[in-house]
Every structure is written in structure tokens, then in C-alpha cells.
Image (cartoon, rainbow over all chains, first blue to last red; front, side):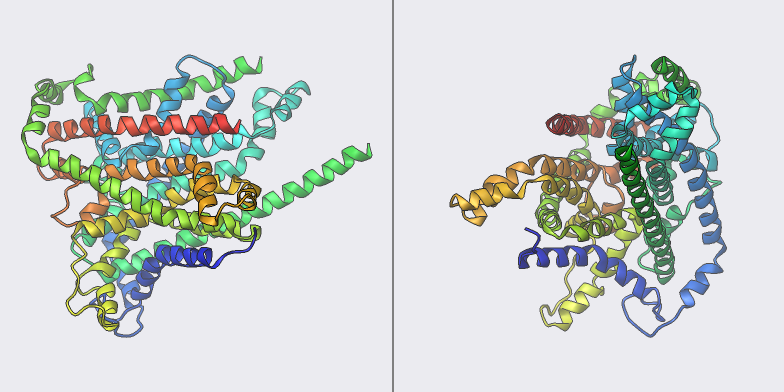
Length: 275
Length: 283
């Protein structure tokens, strides 16, 4: 069954062309000399130069980066704890409600999440700005982290933890020495997911920000509404490049880790057999 | 013992999480928020049903809800028709390719949503690349109007949400035992019939999950209709955003959100049920 029929080849080719051509075109046209985005007038990197000298974009990029790093880090800690509670906590009061609250933001339209957060910030009289964006991003990305981490925790061999506890480790030590290294790939990919979600978000940030803070997506949004601009093409290409290389790098590291883990397991199995 | 210990250790962050999420939920329904103070509470206490009545009277909202449902439904079907063959081909691909193919499906998901939608603006506009290409091969003599129509919205939704459709279907198809199909073919089924009788039913869980994952967020979509749909396409997410930021009518925006939430509860519950059934079937 491992042979691809021609139909399958065609659908794969078309599928991936559909997924990647628009982005490829975007990147190609970011090197276009002409101001008119659809007319090719020769190769040029001038839009990148103009982008890098645009103060407003650089400021927005800095705000976005700050928000993304801080909110994804907090979200990873909270999300991992939440996942641990969900998977290991057994039955406890309000468990259904808790798991519902973890899953609901994943499918909730952003406009609703944004609106409800904004009303919250207003009702408690909080000044809206960078801090409120961070809080908002932490809240929704935490849920994504906990879903990623809990799927790893669910397949995790519990006897390892119990063995550590029997051998005298405190529960916290057991978590730090045994559980955390094993779920680390999931935690890292949870962080990455939270980070890119935060970098990406337009709607929730627009709701939860005040006049003092503008993020990059908001900046892109306001210029994109005027139509296509080569500067945005350049910016998009930079972002696509960064994300693509980041994800590829992360997956390579993860792959190496799993290969190593497998090898260790195999060695461990042999030792056990020899005994 | 460890149970008890962990419960206490994680109870505190759990309470924080609980609080954050709960206050969001309460606020999504303003009239039920009892602890509101100052001007806002006065504004919201007058809300009652007036805003909802207003929503039913002004047919803009009706039309927006209906056309959101229609657009979300049609684009879900289109995504399924396009996504299924891709997922099928992926599941039939040699083992060593599969990780790479998965990666290629997930990668766009990591790239900015806004940028992916924006990429289509340049392609679909009247003097855009698609029109130039069609003109060049002689398929058209007049430029096609695609941008700022609902066609562009369909393309945008299918394009951005197709990974959500492919992944669950692929997961279902990958588990499918190929010998079942061989058995059916040996027993005289044609390939099409075997596909229809075996492959489709066995990947049903994946299809349902994928459809919900596309339908639910598409219903509340804001970026795609605003960028690609122009002023002619009504979608409720866009109406809410404009009500809020352009008209500054917050109570009406909240009422719009509450109704959208009510509409969404049904598919969300169905989705959760489907997931649970899947898990039970696996376990």
C-alpha cells in the first residue's frame, strides 16, 4: 500500500501548491523594485531598507516581542500546571468546569474573547496598554499550552514518578527530576505555540490595548486596509522566514531528542535483559 | 499521599486560572455580572432586553447572522472536499515522508494568519496576479472581480483553515487498517465502492472533527471578511467589531456577542461529544 497512485500525487501537489504559492508570491514580490505590487520592475531590497528605518514599525515590533515573550512564558507555567492538575488530579470539585474552561477558548471566536476581556479590564478600572495585552494573551495561550502538555502527560508512564517517590524523592523533586524532563518537548512546543499565537494576534490585542500600545499585527492591519504595500510584503517575508526557520529548527532538535531517547531505551532494555 | 500533595500544590494556580476564566465567562454576558461598579454598570443595567429587541428589529443583524452561517457552512464543505484528498494522499504516502508532509501542513499554521490572508489581496485584486495570469493565457478578456466578493472570503477561509481539516482526517486515515480495503476488494468490491463503504465510514470521526474545527471559528471570523470580503460581505464577527470600534455601541456589541455565543454552543457541544466518543472508541 506504500505506493502513491497518480491521483494521490496530484492531490498532494495541488494541495501544497495551494498552501505555499500565495506566501511564495508574497516573498518574491517583496523584492520588487516597483511601488505597484503587481508589476515586476526588477530586483531590489529597498523595501527592506525602508522598513528598517520606519520608527513606528520598529516600536510596534518591540512591543509585540515583549508581549509575546512574557505572556508565553507565564502561559507555559500556568498551562503546564493546569495540564498536570487535569491529567493527574483525578476527580476534584469543579473538574468538569475547569476542563471546560481550558477547552472553550480554543474554539471561541476571538471577537468574543477580546470583548469579554476588555469589559473585564474596564470594570476593574485597569489602564489599558502593554500589561493588559499580556494578560489577555496569557489567558488564551495558556489553554493551548495545557492542551499540548496534557496530551503528553496522558501517555506518560506513571510508575516512573511513583518509583521516584518510593525511593525517597519529595513530590516536587519527583516532578522536577522525572516528570519535567520527560514532558519537556511538549512544554517547549507549548511555549512556541503560545509565542507565535501572541505574535500573530490582531483581534484580541486590538480589544485589550489602549492608546499607549500598538502591536505589529495592529500596525500591519492598519496599513493593509489601505491595500497592498511593498513594505508590508517585506515585513511579512521577514516574519515568514523567522517563523519557518524557528519551527524547522525546533522540530530538528525534537527529532534528535526522540532518536536519543529511543536509543537510550533500547540500551536500557538490553541491560535489563542481561540482568 | 502524592494525590493529596499534588492537589494542594496545584490548587492555588488552579484557583487563579479558574478565576480568570470564570470572570471572562461572566463578562461575556454583561447582565449577569453582579459586581459591576460606576458608569458601566449603570449603562449595562439598563441593557436588559432592549439591545436584544433592537437586534431582532434591525434586519442588518439577522442578515449578518444568516450570511455568517451560510459562508461558514459552504466554506466548511469546500474545505472538506479539498482537504480530504490531501489527507488521504498523506496517509497513503510512504512512511518516511509522512513526518515531513505533516510538518508542511502544520508550518503555515505557525505563520501569521494576517499575513496569509493578506497574501491573497495581491493575488485576487482586479489588477492582481490571478487576473494577469488568466489574461495572459487568454482565458478572460475582462478582469474578474474576485476581491471584495464572497468568493474571496470562501478562498480565504478554505486557505487558512485547511490544516484544521487535514490533520484530524489524516489522523483517522492513518490508523485505518489497509487490509480491510484489500479484503473488500478481494470480495469483489470496486475501488470506488470500497472507498465509499470502508474508508469514509472509518474516517467519519476525523471528518466530523475537522468540519467543526473549521465551522466554529469561521462563523466568528473577522479578519478574512474585512480584508477580502469588502463592504458587500456581511459576517457577524465584522459587524461586532465595527459596532464596537466604529459605532462605539458597547451594549449592542455585547448583545451580538451573546447571541453568537448561543449559536456556537450547539456545535461546540456536538464537537466535544464527538471527541469523547472518539477517545472512548480508542480506549
